Length: 404
Ligand SMILES: *[C@@H]1O[C@H](CO)[C@@H](O)[C@H](O)[C@H]1NC(C)=O
Ligand SMILES: *[C@@H]1O[C@H](CO)[C@@H](O)[C@H](O)[C@H]1NC(C)=O
Ligand SMILES: *[C@@H]1O[C@H](CO)[C@@H](O)[C@H](O)[C@H]1NC(C)=O
Ligand SMILES: [Zn+2]
Image (tube, rainbow, N blue to C red; front, side):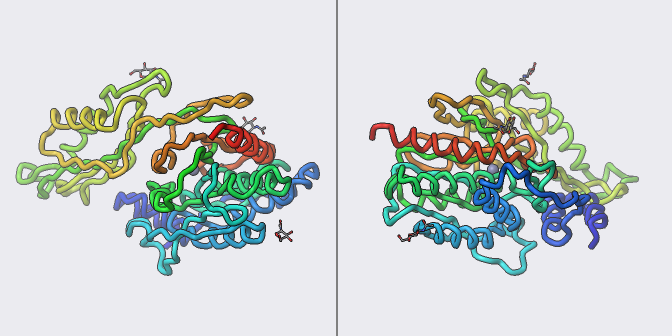
């Protein structure tokens, strides 16, 4: 099927998720190829960092398909004298995985210099990306484009370089720092949930996500829900013989859009996104069912409070709607950011931070900007990559200086 047909099918069937995953695996969308470019000469002494980053971006690892990039990293880390453990993580849900005929095993990687797996500090980020795949490209001599170039393969590469450089210079010893690269962050965190089974504790965990080289002091929480309106099909010429499910869902969604949700000074307003809708089969048929997938980025309070607001609004409009809430939900997440020399920022995206259990201090830091992550123009500057290696080294040094 050509992408245009796929798009048409998707519009008709209102199943955009399938469309994007189909596109990702079978029909990588084409964008005009930029002329092949070289990096500016000035970057030649960063070759190890840049070639690791390039290799990671070149290996497609859309959630569910992380196997190959995991194997590459395992070999890379072993060559650099890390002890590497694979932690098996199950396959992703059928919805995401239907595109894969040959399911390869998925695994987290846990790596540390020397033999001591119990360390004081952990650096962690994710190796999966969102669809679709975009190839690696250099533009303007100092920009690197491609899926994952920012989120989060920039973090993977710079975290590894930071730890490796400190190891080679003798600033860290076995027992100081470990690396954890998880699968499945982009679709709810099954990799990080599994990482809890490592049964390890750390004083400090440094998470990698794009923060434009600032320390994030917190991020919003999240709540997912699915609304279903049930109707009764009939000929559209005789609407009284049926019940229109779309006509029941639309006022409910309209009421949600008008609802004031909790806000706070630190995070601003909670925001609501009606991300996916479906309903009916044809213009001349009264729709039998209608559905909507909605998420709220929570700026204040617990997910239960926001959940109650949603239920109250929906019940007032139509008490026969069927609303189910997603398994994953959390309120705003506090993150430590008490280190001199770093700017701080709050961010609106979710992370694995809340998923990793323990009483560790937590930091969130990484190269590149979230504003281009997940887009078709995902890219960052080489300056951001090289600065992040230094940034992670400072964070590790700071964490190791803390008293136990
Ligand atoms: C790895 O360790 C071996 C033996 O200790 C050493 O000879 C080698 O140089 C190390 N390799 C790297 C990349 O550090
Ligand atoms: C938050 O929402 C209120 C209205 O509900 C609006 O006036 C305000 O501008 C919003 N703040 C931000 C930061 O978007
Ligand atoms: C890093 O990237 C951000 C956002 O793209 C930019 O504002 C900042 O100037 C860059 N910093 C460096 C050191 O390259
Ligand atoms: Zn990410």
